[in-house]
Image 1: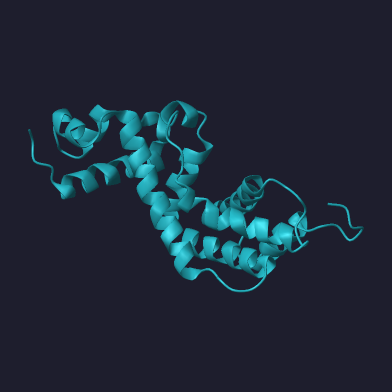
Image 2: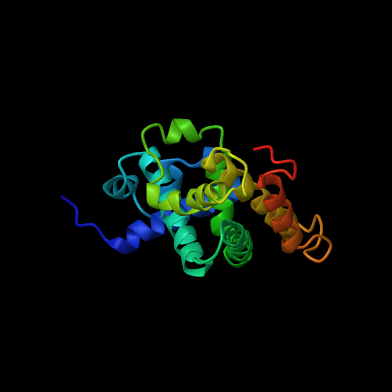
Length: 198
């Protein structure tokens, strides 16, 4: 049995991240990853059972980094609107500081092959609950409309990520449309209407 080297595992994960960022999730293969890492394919299989396992682990590592960053930076006090505003701003900060990581996460989340690659693998609750709990709190406070909390956070996440991409690709500047305006639009979209409809 081969002894596992954590540095080789990390190298394989970084190579996969590079391939996904450059060419998309569909272009990943175990042989391509091993070749780019200058390792044998047998070595790649020592660390990961198959392509699905490799993809899930690279996604999970980047997603954990994202979650840890947000948990360290967002406001833990206050009402749901304050917390959602903090989430939006810190997601933006994360995306500008760690664009490659966010791009990889988003590539996996939006891939039409996601279900094929992750049929049994689900995101751990600790990576979803902190964000859906913001929406649940807002619903309990009567501020946010009664909506699926996961869907609401998915809505917020995608609007911010698309904004970050547009800034990154210089479709417009962060001065022409600010993160404050994006946060305000997201919060207004989730709020109970002034007519009291939920």
